[in-house]
Each structure stands twice: as C-alpha cells, then as structure tokens.
Length: 216
Image (tube, rainbow, N blue to C red; front, side):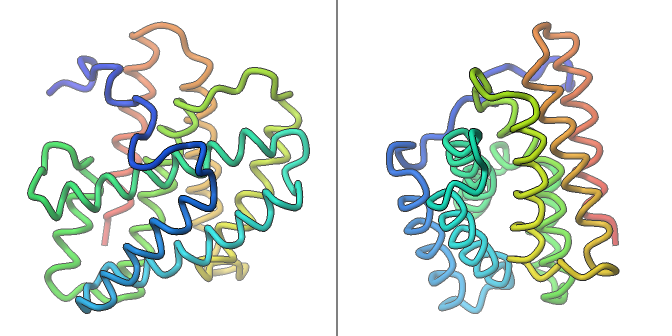
C-alpha cells in the first residue's frame, strides 16, 4: 500500500486496555507480557523487562507531578505509546503480519535467528521511539497543554526512557537521544497537521526512519 494512501484509521486510539486504568493498568499488562516472554525464553524478553522498569518510573513521575501541567497528557501518551509495541507484539505472535509495522516485523524476524540480546534491545527501543512515539503523539490530544509544558515534558520523558532501558550513559545514549528527539519532533508535527497530504509526508518520514532502526 502506498504511504500516501494510509487511512487515518491506522492511528485510532489504543483499545488494549482502558485509558481510565492509566499507568496502573499499563503496568499490569506489561508485567504480564514480560513474564510470558521470560518463561518462554523469548529473545524479546529483555525489551519487555526494560519496559516494566520504564512504566514503573513513568508511574512514579506521573504520581509526583514531574511533568507539571502536562502530567495528565503525559499519562495518556504513555499508555498510547505502549499500545504501539503491544499491538505489534501480539499481532506478530498471532501471525497477523499485516497489522505489524515494517520495522517491528523486521526486528521480530531477526530476533528469531540468534540476534544478541543487546542488539535486540537497541533496535527495539529505536523502533519504539522512531515509530510508536510519533504515532502516539499524533493521537494524543494536546488541547489545553502549553507548548512550553510539552517541551519540558519531552526532556523529562527522554531522561526517564534512557535511564530505564540502560542508555543514560553519554556514549551509549547518544543515538537514543537522537531517536527520541526525532520521534518527538515528528509526533508534534503530526499532531499539528490538518491535511491528508501533509500527514502522508510525515507518515513516510516516520516509516523510513523506523526502518533504519533495524539497520545492523
């Protein structure tokens, strides 16, 4: 399917669990996925376990109001962001490959053939930031959230994400900081776009960037 023809239905709000459940519901779902993957000795387990740490840190940040005026918005964003990975994971395991974005299909396929845990974690996080993050930002209503609050939220979210997944070191985190910045930029652009032509251009940029996450 041509990217220009991507239906807007592709970025409908998440339906895996109620947004009313917030971070608590997300933590339960992610912990369940992590345990299942670990019990199966699945190569995707390290990313899932890192996600458990990320959700715990985000939950604490939300409860403490670390995102200031953007805290309710960031809580919704975190739930929707996670949906991208969860949907890809579950759809792939059900052989519903048409529902799995190209970057995730490539990553999951490589993880079946002896990809190292460190490399699997790296490319999984990159895809999550370059594809799932902008798509979630495009879905999450920013009404009532000041631009400066959103800018500050990006910095806090980036710090929490890199620390949870072990990429907070200067050298190790450089590429991930760039991935986070690029994904956030594209998501904000998507949220502020009102025409299908403009959306298609951003979709194409996001798609191509996420495919590069799988580069050896």
